[in-house]
Structures are given as C-alpha cells and as structure tokens.
Amino acid sequence: MSWYLVVDIRHWLDENEEPGVPQLKSKVDFLKELIAYETAFEAGMENFPLPICRKRPGRKPCKSPLRTMTEDNVQGVAGKVIYWQCPKCKDSGMVYGWEGLMCDLSGHDFEEESFN
Ligand SMILES: [Zn+2]
Image (cartoon, rainbow, N blue to C red; front, side, top):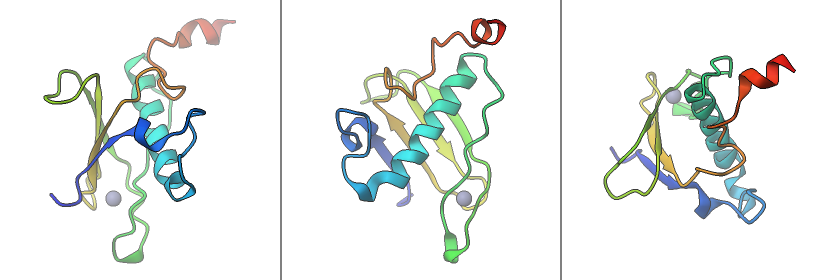
C-alpha cells in the first residue's frame, strides 16, 4: 500500500485556501474537487461530476471515475475523512482537515437555491 496517500489538506493550503506552493496546485485541485463532490453528495446533491483519477500509470492517463466514501470517527484523526480509490489503477488515499473550507459543501441548502 505504498501508494496510499494521507493528507491533512490544511497543510497544503495558505490562508486563502490556495496551494501553499505551486507544485501542489494539481493535487490541491484534485482534493478540492473530491471534497466538493463528496460533501455535496452527502448534502443530497447528486449531480456533481464524479472525480476522475489523475494518475498516469505507464504515462497513460487513467481517467477512471473514483470510488469515494466519507467516514466519521477514524482513529487518530479529528473530524471527518474522505477516502478515494480508483477501481482501475488502485490509486487510493484519504484526506481530512477540510471541514469548514470553501470546498466543504456540507450544510449547504441546494434545494432552496434551486427554487429561488
Ligand atoms: Zn486510476
């Protein structure tokens, strides 16, 4: 499981919730997309595009839709954790520390928005 990535996203962000260093931009973009998708899904909004795998095994883009899951009460982690796994290339990881960020859409009232 050497490819298993564990990220506290706040370590990668500056005070404006942007990548702390330019090299992290694509990874941060990926994680934000994942968090927005998963928290929107949990909030009842199922129309968000499924995050796509960005790995390039053998230099070929994988592009498989990822499996995602949110979990509470993970040992050693404060707050909720989002897991992802690619069914195709088996890339996987977990991210935490995202609660309250702009990409955290939990508690967002999508229904009210669509009626107004
Ligand atoms: Zn993949």
